[in-house]
Image (cartoon, rainbow, N blue to C red; front, side, top):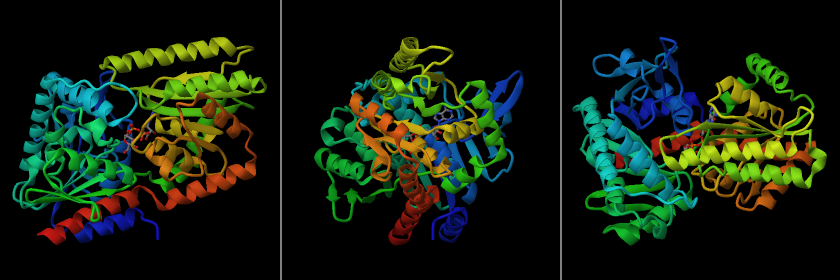
Amino acid sequence: MAWNRQRLRELLRHQLGDGLFIIVSNREPYIHRLQDEAVVCQIPSGGLTAALDPVMRCCGGLWVAHGAGDADRQVVDAHARIQVPPEEPSYTLRRVWLSKQEEAGYYYGFSNEALWPLCHLAYTRPIFETSDWEIYKAVNRKFADVILEEIGNRNAFVFIQDYHFALLSRMLKRPNIRTAQFWHIPWPNPEAFRICPQAEEILDGLLGNDLLGFHIPYHCQNFLDTVDRLLESRVDRERLQVTRGRVTTCVRSFPISVDSEAIAEQVADPAVEAEMTRLTRHYSLRQRIIGLGVDRVDYTKGIAERLRAIDRFLERHPEFHKRFVFVEIGVPSRIHIPVYQRLNEEIEQLVNEVNWKYQTDGWSPILHVNTDVPLTTLQAWYRLAHVCVVSSLHDGMNLVAKEYVSSRIQDDGVLVLSHFTGAARELTEALLVNPYNLDELAEAVHQSVIMIPEEQQRRMRKLRAHLKEHNIFHWAAGILSCLLQVELQQV
Ligand code: ADQ
């Protein structure tokens, strides 16, 4: 039987007992902003929060995150807490306040200028600033203090998210606390990782966890190899665990996913269908073949490669001029970092160039939407697109690929997917490509637009069947039951 909300809830109720369940992440699942002098509550885009909100809704507990919204302070109580989601309060969000300087050093600096490029092999050089590292440590400590205050003497399970908190589990180490951490981005090989001046401290920090999760076995192997090379410890490859001092950390893979059944239901809603009609009219898309790219604008996502491939495809196949439109929905992110500013400019310029080269009679081949789009609109695009191109140069998993597949309720459409995503290990019926190979990517776009309906259906049915079983609840149940077993064995 596939995992669903109900089964996950029962598992947690049964295993947690009176223990407190806490999720920690940098980004908050709900953010309050000021708009036209009114406070509005928004859901930030990004894979991590989208994946974990359904988990938290079903088990309650506490979510600790950076309060980043300009109206966040206005809506919390005296302990910086608020009940969410607003329409159906089911868990507590505890906000942690960071100064501009802390945000610059911990988030933009060490997390995103050092660790992010270090772990993604996309040929962007990491920047290691000692001052950023000092702030990163201090912010990890600040989160640890908040969490320890919330836990008091109770038993607690803390589920830490991502590379922003490499040192947190070590700081939380207490007999009444068990921790699991999920690393949402790839883990590189030891040669790549050892250039980090703080490599040993980061590894030591992560080995404070009882359980450490990655998306795919390859990232686990890389982690074990890195520990073996760089740190005094005992690495047991058969049992996939590392012992350092008196702590044993299990290292396992748990491929993250989406709530595929909920997505399939949502996209069939009349509101999504009305939005499909509106978009088709608004952008004059009737009779056109629609290609789609959806990303946070990041140099790891291969957006420029994708746009160049569209150019190559149109160059080679003029019969698709005026028939094909590629919709690129890219929400700018981390714009305070220079490399991201340059990337936004590069994409803008590429879109202009390609459009200038081909546009005629009211047709432009690329439609560029450079904002966050509401969920209904995003789902309408997923349904309208004949092909979705995910061309990441390196990606832990990539949820866009899984969202697109889950939205194809008529079993049609084609997913073009980079080999270098975690998703490529599971979604093998996609057209798998090397995004560095422009001709291959352009050819995959061509293959998708000429693929016969029977072949589309054969592939899409398999992909959808896979996601029906390997959904977000399967991921959460895997990692949480593993954490709770650790508890049972070790106490
Ligand atoms: P991300 O790098 O953020 O996640 P991804 O997994 O693709 O990448 O998730 C992006 C999410 O943001 C999707 O849910 C998508 O719908 C949403 N999104 C993107 N652009 C949007 C837009 N313009 N408007 C609205 N929504 C938009 C990190 C890792 C990934 C890993 C996830 C989860 O980098 O490898 O899959 O965490 O672990």
